[in-house]
Length: 220
Image (cartoon, rainbow, N blue to C red; front, side):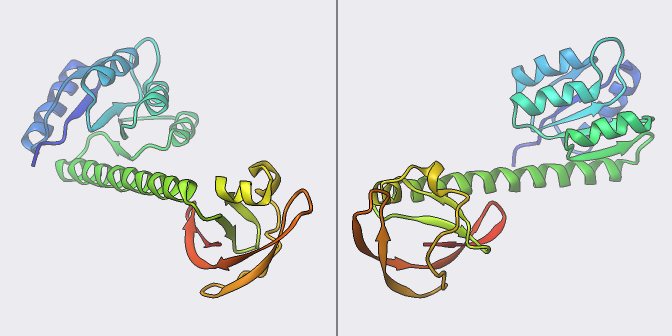
């Protein structure tokens, strides 16, 4: 298995060297070390590490929180904060960037390794979940059957192109509206279709339970 690559962002050279040595002893690869937020962003774009270990308090220029915001906006790379001190305002700013971990200096090797491994695993799971959802969304969107996703309150959360065509309505006219048909999971029923133009029709509705954006929903 290839070593996880970790970019170290630390403005104190002696501390950066200690961190680098510690990480290498733990089995990680270090593709680079940055001493400023601006340099960190540049290096992330160059080496694409698996994780960024980011000191919050850097020298002149942007601090670690600002750099993390930029990295989160442009790269799908997890950030773990590493700092010896931060005031309440800085901590609140750090929370907003949704870091994958937070380590206080001085740290124990075991704590560092545990935090990094949890961050890498969490990021891997989240990426796989996004990919799975994107694949599911693509399959549903391209289906030859008209499909609607309805939440537990009976509100339409999504309709595919086929259902738009069938009902002669745009998604914007259907999403966030009540579905209009009784939702009974596991059943198949013939329903009257109410098209926008008033032309009547019939169709067969199959209801199955699914998950949509982390919530239980029905696929009609």
